[in-house]
Image 1 (cartoon, rainbow, N blue to C red):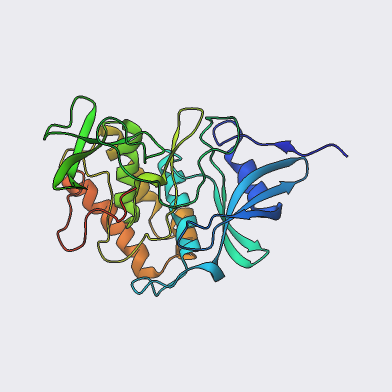
Image 2 (image 1 turned 30 degrees about the vertical axis):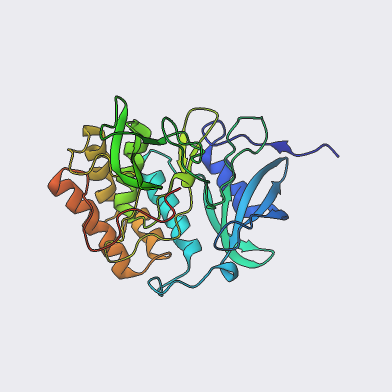
Length: 301
């Protein structure tokens, strides 16, 4: 019998085909990412003549969080994917909710770095390592974050915050002034992402950028914690306003997106999503830190 055909990253194969593979294929656990705070299992999934690498996060392996008592994190990961797809930006790898070897969980397509033609950087949510002193941060697998000396971000970079790098020294944490990151910052504001770290940014070989680890999202209160504050207070792009306008329509009662989200998050949380989209359209700017919650996740990478 011939081996199943390996599917490439999204953008090459139809999203619907990938979703069907992830949802209906046979999952085989091949390893575990031990650095992750919750159970993260590396798997292969095969369905018919197709196969792919993926990540499986069973609900049973989730670490309880005091401020997310209303539902499991796996459902929030799927909800984040659905909102990402509704924007048309496809910033989250194909993600489904399904039964697996250890019960219900989130299954997400693995996005490799393409550096060696193999799996590369994992969708693992683990720590990315230590920061460098200048230029692209060697602890950031995306190459989109940096620590620079002085108080100026430099051309092509956006300042985030001063960081303590030890021995009484500080450096300016910056991120790239990249339209892919800017779209992700808008998505994070919509889904209220409480944990946008550098290690959650995965550039794909085809030039696309994906964000992973969206379990800590959709809280009813403002929980936005991110490294992508570089555009805080700046006007949203025309593209972002068009996307948010369409998203607001898709979140209306009875619309397919709203109906599906209602199966994954609570009614209060869904109402909060609508309110955040409406607020972004009303103000027309990227949100600023609220001051009521730590603005930057820890560890940042």
